[in-house]
Amino acid sequence: MDRHPADTGLDLRHQWMPFTANRSFKAAPRLLVGAKGVFYRSADGREIIDSLSGLWCVPAGHARQEIKQAIVRQFDELDFAPPFQTGHPAAFEAASRIASLMPAGLNRVFFTNSGSEAADTSLKIALAYHRARGEPQRTLLVGRMRGYHGVNFGGMSVGGMPANRKAFAANLLPRVDHLPHTYSREHQAYSRGQPDWGAHLADYLETNIIALHDASNIAAVIVEPVAGSTGVLVPPKGYLERLRDICTRHGILLIFDEVITGFGRVGAATAAERFGVTPDAITFAKGVNNGMVPMGGVVVRQDVHDTIVNDSPPGIEFFHGYTYSGHPLATAAACAALDLYEKEALFARARELEGHFQDLAHALKGERLVQDIRSFGLAAGIDLEPRPGVPGARGFEAALCAFELGMWLRTSGDTLAIAPPLVAERAHIERMFETVRKVLKTLP
Ligand code: PLP
Image 1 (tube, rainbow, N blue to C red):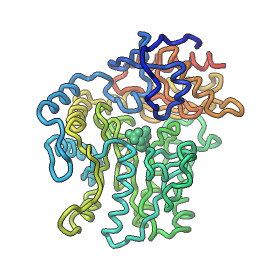
Image 2 (cartoon, helix red, strand yellow; image 1 turned 180 degrees about the vertical axis):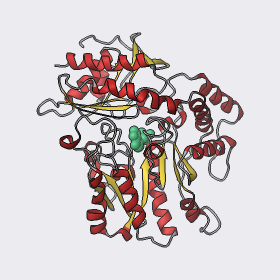
Image 3 (cartoon, rainbow, N blue to C red; image 1 turned 90 degrees about the vertical axis):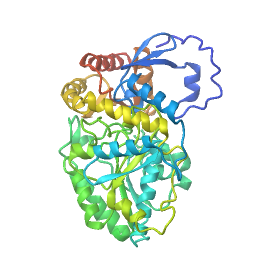
Image 4 (cartoon, protein in one colour; image 1 turned 135 degrees about the vertical axis):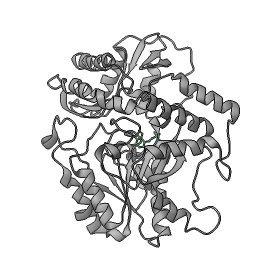
């Protein structure tokens, strides 16, 4: 724990690092200088096993040559094309490929460069849709406590992670309400897969939010089907079905934010498919191109698209988009990544590994400091007992300790998250959980 990192030879002062304890990092940097398969290499020459697929974004593992070649080919052919009023083949091909993986009916794809932009785009689509339908008063956006939809103003406003909102609370979007989160340790502790308790929490939408605001004023509900960033909260059995039913009955769009759950994490192309619940829109990012080039997007039901586009006067139908929407390198990487996922049957592989993965996760029950373990697909959240008076401190120490022991471990507060690349071998996954066990024994 007290080994001091070698001098990096870099001037670390100028990069203001995102979601990072900058002062602590710069005092003891954890620099990654290489990656291959399920491992990083640190600046001091150690192998660091990647227990979170980067940031949930590298399902096929690092340094996949097929994706590199596709990016290089695309670069040589067409490096950049303006996405406004011109198009290029890779973006259309990627959109078709992505649509083919979505639940039936969701087949119109709008590209962004990140999950945050995807979330905000989905909210704007919801507003534009209701306006085009002649219900412009439907402007209220409903998120959920402990939800994470990125850091832009829309996603942050519907999100429910207090630390992410605190500094900006005075100027969040005004027309927002929140569902309660679905976690109860009392009723769900150590549940594997979907908890039995909690479907009724969806009813809050009807009994409280619709009762208060009236459905005719509500544009959309956005939820992560499995809440990832807050520490892997798995939806109770029947919960998503009830949300779907209430939204349908009241003409409210249901958006699944699948930035984490999309592209194999839950053993299917989408959580919508795995749970058998079809929303009206799905946001994606991360795994869409194995995290190789920034990219995200929103897939919507065809009639949502048609309502906005076909019923509009001639000219631009939706005044929204990014300079890099559908960037040639990003979309070429997406096509190559989707090829790889198919060729290596990675979504099915995640499903096959899930039993062993979850056995290993739940085998940590009873270790010191562990208060709860949740798991779904190839994702697990492990709650540690917070250090009295300093919430989050123990989680941070766990991450530092894991790095010392040769593992990249992501923590959210005092919750550890494990989500290996889908190409990980059983032995890799075993090593990840063994490292967690060592961390738990080592922590003060
Ligand atoms: N939505 C969800 C569900 C996420 O998990 C994330 C990132 O983890 C985002 C949105 C934001 O994505 P990005 O960091 O690419 O903006």
